[in-house]
Length: 225
Image (tube, rainbow, N blue to C red; front, side, top):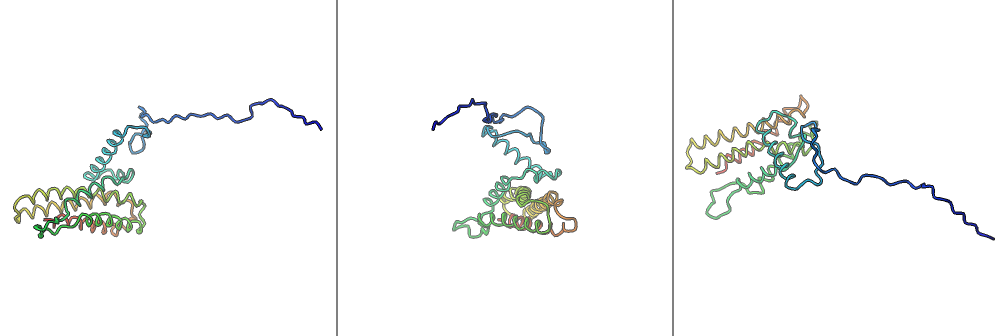
């Protein structure tokens, strides 16, 4: 038996592998932007310094929107937890009580206690919002509540400056007014950002936990001596 091996000419039946492996990481100079006005470009090979500065500017813009709550979707669209983390750490550091033996009159909360009050409180308020039928994600709500601590943090700074002087009834009244203003502004800003996410007939039920959340934190600010 003769084995016959036929050799056929290759007619290029294998599929060709073609493509572009380059990653468009450079920032373009076109004016294409996302709906929120943020440039739409790739950041994979962007310098770390530029990325950090851009994130810091984004956090600063959110602080501005809380102090001037006019644009309602700014915190909900591009949410982050950097600002709330900074504010919570700052307030916990200032409000924590002294552990020295000669400061027994300082009844301030511990660092961890402030952290628990802020984050657990924000989580409970967010859970209540979701149970009421709110059309907002968990982290969006936590982001808004965290950033809205800005007026309360400002009132804490003012109160700490007032505490440097010998305390009188007038200075206590100034601390009270400052803390009340921070509490009212924080509650109002939260309602501006979160109010639209709730059903109209359930907004009072959503606002009440927000009121309690900022009231407790403002009470810690006022009672801190």
